[in-house]
Image (cartoon, rainbow, N blue to C red; front, side):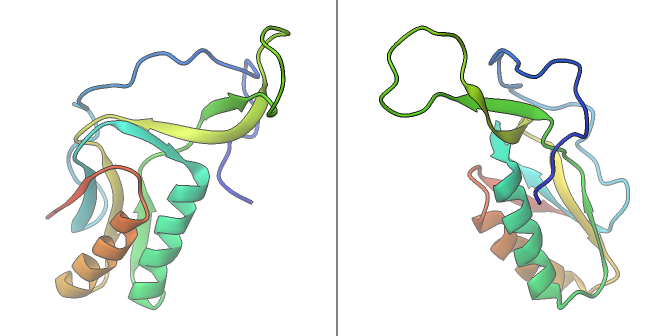
Length: 134
């Protein structure tokens, strides 16, 4: 199963606005190298899991990986060929809203070259542009 919150106060949320830039989670806290979002966007739980699996596969499950974002935002969708009105659709998947500059993943316990190659493959699975920071 993909990442999603156990319990939320409200089942459905409004769209809101994407954060342009992030100011809080822009520096490394746990690892020695990290993958940072270069632009803002939404990352679904499936995409996050695909990136994590790709990074893990490249590292051959050595070292430690931290995921610094969590998909806690419900994305709703109405079924196809349904007429307008009749309320908001049901929750389709969970996503994380990411501002530019947010650290997404961190790694320690492996060589820098291995971590960089792992982040390149993991970053290719994400829908936003990413950069590698040390």
